[in-house]
Image (cartoon, rainbow, N blue to C red; front, side, top):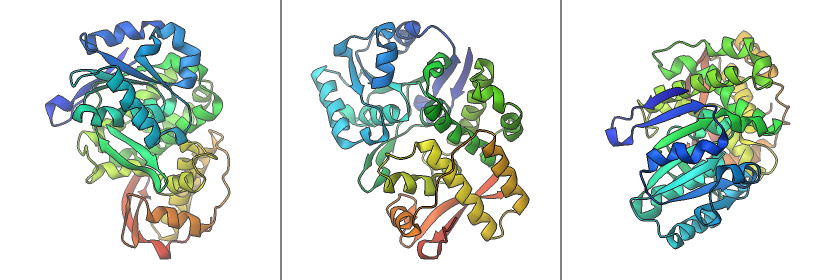
Length: 357
């Protein structure tokens, strides 16, 4: 087992993260010491419930099953979770447990942050994307018709329990989606201000085949590195007032792409990869990076076989960017590469952004 501590300046917000590979049926016993006898409601992905519901052993009364897909991260399901918690008579001392991917974690976490003005929240990520990114750091939210994650809060979990055995049944599309967030960390590593140096780009390049084969040891190491890089940022800037913005690398374009396609066409990771490609093009056009770094990035992305996404009408993309939380008046904040494995924030005038690539 790998144990990592997230140390938020406000002590009561700090929490443990474990990375392990135990039998899925042991989860309830592992959660018990964290709950300390509290009542709870489990919000679980429909796919995970079908695969592991019997092994996990939660009763129908104890769980809310959420359909899969980004479109399910909406106000209607948020209200349904709150209604179930009320019927289940959860008090301010009780807890919500999220078992699933980023959609489940974001939605359940937002419900926990607002129910009775905030109750305990435990993350059990079952996708690679949730393991390396969304389960850590305390960002919780719902989507609206105006854009992704525009309604949300910062709310740290009580604990994050990662079991790599859940990844055995993750389909290739969702696994690749997680890898989209994974490669992001390679390009921002030096900007993360971590006291450890991982040379993550080399790790990914040298271990690409083992990663794609889901070699358990390699995946555990990969998840550990990503989490440590994210923690090094979150501990310094919990509420994205400065440094934490670098975690949005690839997301300005990626979120806009998800919005204009109604969250139906691409996974989050696929959209982020396209966003990374766009960020490199923009950075080169502004003289921020040399062409050789752009091609280095292209080669690294190609090692993981990400599919190509066509160029979407710039007007639609830019219109979606105007509604993004990173937009202020006529400008939008992009995180762009500057040096090898470093990024910086640039505010670009929306009407002057060229996206013909």
